[in-house]
Length: 455
Image (cartoon, rainbow, N blue to C red; front, side):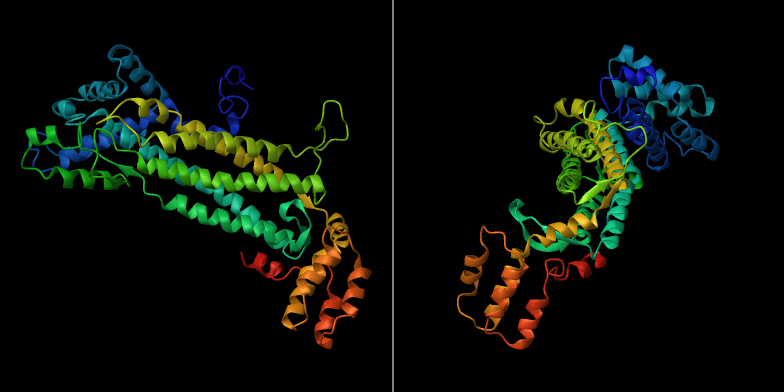
């Protein structure tokens, strides 16, 4: 491990840095600066393409290529130069503007464009669009693919173990049997719904000036349709335009995105806790890794550490995501700076989410059901067939079916012989009696197998 990672304050930059690496180019300080540069350059090109702005002629192919290259080939050295400028300006977005002007000033054919850099913009025009681009990139290229990989793994497990019977445990007590595959299919169905919701959330942006009214725009070019121009620009970035804002875009879309991610993470926490419990019951085994130690003092231990790690990191992520969702839509009057410092932590929340995804994937990769243990547990729970027996009795009009089975089974451990004797005394049609006599806890799984294979 590098010295930097050993001395990092945050675990997503230290111990878990490898898991968070895909987000580093997006949410780091470099990533934010890069996104700002891209937005500023795109705005400058859009202004030049507007026929009504005669003082800024459209760039020729060479000039346009040069501007695009400045954004696309942005390097750490460029970001360092911006930070050096910021040391004087004490304003991060203004430093980006000066950096671009500095670079354009080095090219004679672009010198006339200098004062159209950041034209009519407030810092939040740039920041809002930069964060929107960052969030879209993180969601679409990192988070959703990782979520899809988890869904593919879970779906495979649901299909592989669709018919493997398992005792349910509602309230922690023995209950009607299910199958391993069906329980995993439940998680797939939940996660897929939230995944689609996450993918469908609009990533929103604005570029309408200091308080959202195009004041400066109109003072310079009153004849231009600035709302239409702004909408075309924002849409051209692949974002959804918000026409009604104060100085800041109100971040409702970011709140929706954070809430959607939090719901995905919450389902994953639920799953981690269930698997943890099933491992404790012996329903699942974990494969061993050579050289791995489970306890510093108890040599026998094989702990479910991956599921615990995943649960903890999903929880950390959700704590931050919850704060974002609650805080970011709130701003005093036309703006305050509380959102600025909070937005910088977006990467930390998604970083912990990635750490959790990786831990969960590791855990699933080491997991296998124990058919013998599952069967043994079912064979000691014949009382779960009371549900089936009393329901068949209801169909055929026998008196007090629920109450009679309750007297036989509630709070008691009964065996196969007890149920068989009870069934033998029932005045049922032969076919119904035969059906009940053939039932076992392992065969009483309803449509679980079919449902698991359909997911």
